[in-house]
Length: 229
Image (tube, rainbow, N blue to C red; front, side):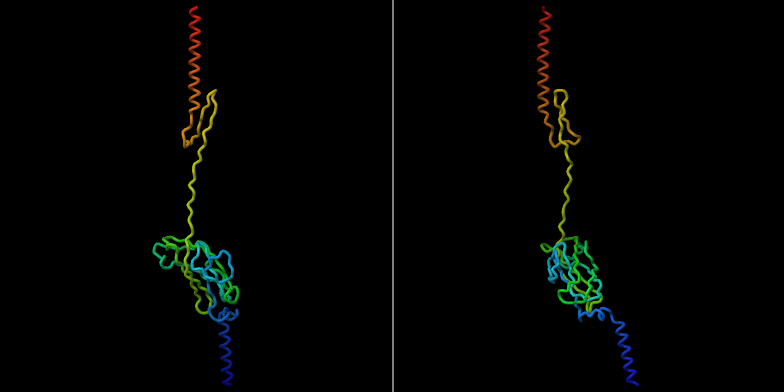
């Protein structure tokens, strides 16, 4: 009788323990241990080969490998590290998913790529010469066996800044119209960069004045000649 009671109690404890155990540890058949890891990638296209790049450009990726099933989402944070974590330096995540889904399948080996997220960081302050900004990424994966935190420290080059072109005010060229036999040059309300050339028009005016004076002198001589007759 006592033996039957002990067996019943042990069975009850096993049932309760099984009911209260997390689903990620019992229903997914995940391998034992803390399986997930992350890599920093500077590749444009993923090649599913885990490799870490300690120096990346403005746009880079975090790759999540071998995480257990039912780790539905990770929590990703970035922070500046020495020597670029000065009081005046700041880091902002411009783009990228900070809660990617990483638990779509069971952990199945070192090339099991669960997620790949691209990020762009912007910075304020002074970078380290030739290397950029020293950054630490922290990934929390709730539900992982053992420690659910992974870290990577790497260097990020700041994004290039472009200065917009200064718009220029267009200048309407001068136009020439004709008034009688004399060309007249006109300009728009916007002053041109050079004074208009009026040499040809002035020459015509002088020539016209001289011709008029000569005709007047001839007519005056004829009038005097007729008056003396």
